[in-house]
Amino acid sequence: MDASDLTPVGKLQYKAIMEGEEVYKNLMKMSEDPMKYNEELLLKLIDDNKDTEYGKKYDFANIQSIEDYQKKVPITTYDDYAEYIYRMTEKGEKNLISAYDITHYAKSSGTMGNPKRIPLSTLSQKINNDYAMAFRTAVIAKEFGIEWINEIVLNLIEVSFTTLKCGATYGAVSGKMITNLSDMLHLFFTSPIEAFMPTLDTDSRYLHARFALAYKDLSNAVCSFFNLFLDMLRYIQRDWELLVNDIEKGTIDESIKMPDDVRKKLEANLKPMPERAAELRDIFSEGFDEPMIPKIWPNLKVLTGIGTGGFANYYKKLKNDFADDSLNYYFVGLTASEGTFSVPFELNNPDAMLVPNSMFYEFLPLGSEDFDDIVTIDGLEVGKRYEVITTNLSGFYRYRMRDAIEVTGMKNNTPTIRFLYRIDQSISFAGESTSEEALRNAAYKTEDECGFDLIDFSVYTESEDVPKCIYLMEIENIGDDFDKEKIRDKLAENVSEALTAGSEEFTRTSSKEASDYGHKLKSGILNNIELKFLQPETYLLYRDLMISKGTSSAQLKPPRVIVNDIHKRFFLALLDDELN
Image (tube, rainbow, N blue to C red; front, side, top):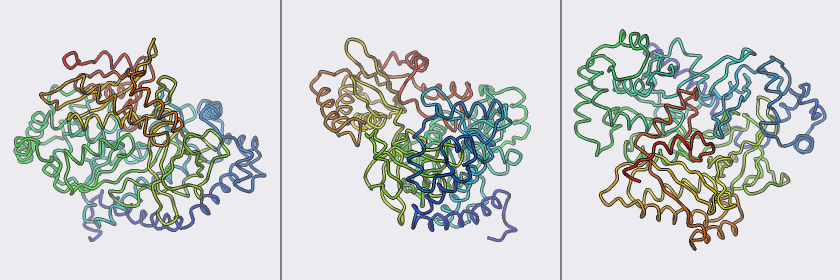
């Protein structure tokens, strides 16, 4: 492809591919001896930050090795940095935990209801951008060449930023790069800027779907989590007539919520598209027994997003119900506000390799609270599970992420991993700690065995005379033989099986304790798994509510474990009386 043939988005993509090939080559070089590069990074971080307040407190100047570091510097949590971050964000103080420039604070997802301010240095931002944009496009180009690069992209990542007293921005990491393109977003993405940076009363889901449908030659789609793309497809399936009518007429239906000034601005640039509308109407009128994605967007090659761990079931539904084999998946590895931990090295592979130059890694075997058991990259064992501890590029040292990962294999000499679950996302049931992984495995197995479509679920516990574990499920495609009690019994059986599978796979207890707990369930001593069904679109309403309260859609994860009364009251107010 000649450079003169490139569109604005083509030029951006081509530049990213060239840069990404260098990033890819460098990662493969580091992957031959990851421990060497990871140790070099740690010692550089220690030297660069020896004159910070934190560095002086823990004698960074006299740390010469990993062993010195582990002896002098304690394991930490966010609370250990809260006072420093307050002084940084509210008083503008510098050189406290990092000597690097901190220009952005990531708003954590707030799984436990308490969003944090995670510092993000310019150095960390550079690494994140290298792997999120350049590296990704290079991996795609390895598979498909560059013929796709001129087509604009469907991007479902939305942005909500504020400015702190110190002058730094505050919001989701995944949206930071989008703001750098804010004046040119219309050249690169199908959605208008009003969808990327929506006001609280703008229906951004409609905007993403309507503008994406109008663009037939879509080749690439990006979302933070696969459930966002799945939600949009379900919305299209349900409301396609409204969407197609608007595409045909060049209008925005009056029922769509948005401010008048936003509506007027958007409608001023809309043109009727009767031919595309007729094409879509023919497609949708045929029904949805066959995958809709290749019919709507025949050139869509790659979907990028998080589709492992708690999002694996969304990938399964996309692949089985909406796509065919022509759609490929770029499974974003373990990324967080604290940095980029792992990246995929090929399409359609959920395993992602650790990035040695992104942060210094330590790993605590799951089930252990003995910090003497901590290992570095070179001590990881394939098939075993660990909690991640990071020393990052933005001022966190030996920081417990509370993320559980499994080592799945090796790429050259570098471990590949999969994210499993948040360790904090567990329930305590009759004195046992049960992971979110066990809870979702039981739910999805029940879905498969009972033949309904599980939109999503949440779990909470009650401890009265007898402890109870209550599942809340939103389901659809219910058969004529629907039997709530049969589903509940199957769910209880599957929860029991998940727990009896042993501690490494399903719980944080020992294998014997997990087995004992499973037998308690089977014997009826703890036969108190309850099931309640939610009204249709409950989780869409939850999404809209959280976004209206300022949560970025890029960070909005399903509330699998309900930990506060406000969320509990929200879901209990939306029980489906007919199904219950």
